[in-house]
Length: 138
Image (cartoon, rainbow, N blue to C red; front, side):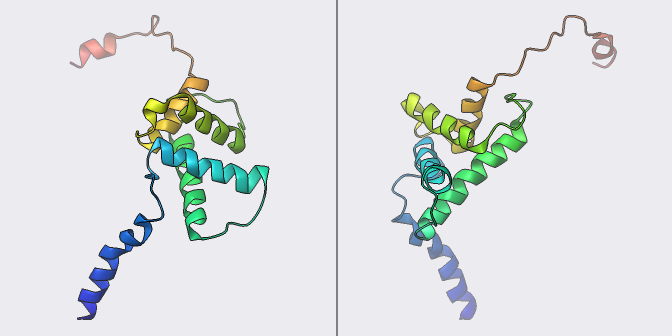
């Protein structure tokens, strides 16, 4: 019986958050809302978060932005060294506002596209590469 109750609780937990987020947090629209809050709470009007929903939004925004930045920097985009987090958040929010057609796209993709648009990596010149190795190993 205890096992059944635990399973019911675990399965119904997402429903507890369903009413709090009318916009999916994993979309461009959700990310814009969450990152606006993150900027407001941390930079523009520093304050403590008011409730668990603000805490979730803040954590989700910072997690998606930081993880995307750390995992794709240097391959998908090439920002300057020590590019500030608040500037990255502002860039992502502006990108979502400038591209309303991306409102329903996945939030990590939005971050990557925003940074790629602002900080494209230099094109590598492959004209001088020796491709004899590729010919030997078909």
